[in-house]
Amino acid sequence: MTYNELAAKTAELGFQPAEPGPRNDASKTLAEVVQSHDQRFWEAFPAMLANAAEAGEFDLDAANACLEENERKFLKLLIIVSLGLYESLGMRFAWAEKLSGDLPARLIENFREKFRSDAELELGQVRMLPGKVSGNFLKCFRKRSGSARSAAEASGKLDLELAVSRIFTPRQKELFLKKLRRKKMTKTEKEYFSRVIKKKAQALANEDLHRLARKVLE
Image (cartoon, rainbow, N blue to C red; front, side, top):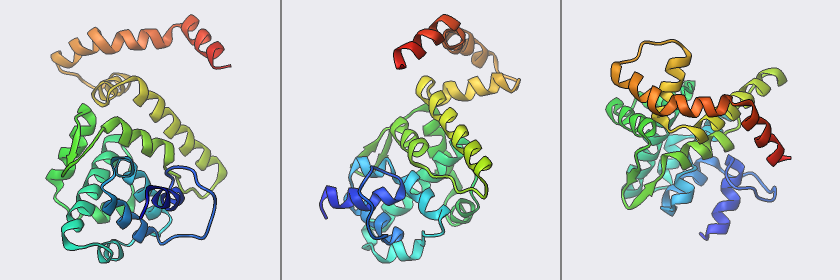
């Protein structure tokens, strides 16, 4: 399968725009993403998995059936990476909890911490950047909602998450939110907040800078 062919199929799962066409089998498409060993698609896997699962179109057994035994381990790893990302973003899904029940909690926690510390992810020969993975998720994930209001709220929350993620590293974001929620910080965290994060927050709060940024974007 060529890159363009796979790009067209993955578009239905929220990654890379494509002309509308007949619906694809989401489980099979995700299996083909695994087989591609393409960094670009793997960095978008958590977003595509969430879109498929939220629509009730992901079947783990069906995806595994499309893969050879040596490829199934990478599907498992990409699911673990996805669960670690969701936890790092504070996202909760009923289907994700079911998936995590059959997977080692230690590995999920390990990848969660990698996202928070902005550490490179290595899956076999493929190396993925945490910022790209979380950025793809926040950009491509289509939150299912029962009402227009809740859909707008979900979209607004994701937009805010993306904006914060573009300014702060995962660890800085964690401390920023910790300070915002008035949670207790260690001496080291307080020193790092004062030395690095506070300066970024002060720049963001500057009204003149805010005005100039809006003018640049007009």
